Image (tube, rainbow, N blue to C red; front, side):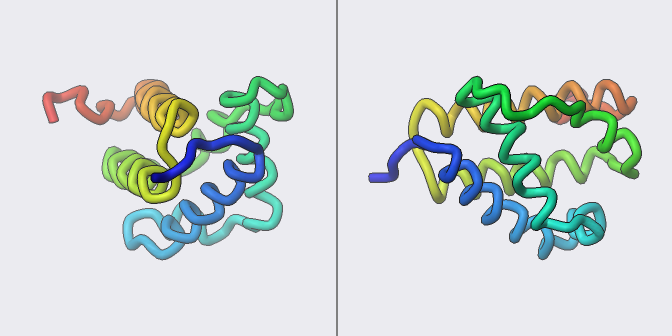
Length: 124
């Protein structure tokens, strides 16, 4: 039986696995290949740790960076699929489910702000 996310290190391990997949995925790799992952992983770990453990380690605005990207609905569908798939393979439990719910919510908000029909927003 898989265990739940228990520590910040668990979040970092998940994110490394997830971004490894995203960097190899035909739809997503162009959005992430330019990132310095050694720099990005600690930042995104802070983001998720703040959401899951309320440790206030992140103080940025993630939307600003995403606003500069050329994102479309397919990017969000693929990102969410890989996020859920990676999480389901690695962890199970309340915090793992919370991360998936938060990812879904953030994707909806970002798509709305970017003027993209949200995943499921057109009946799909």
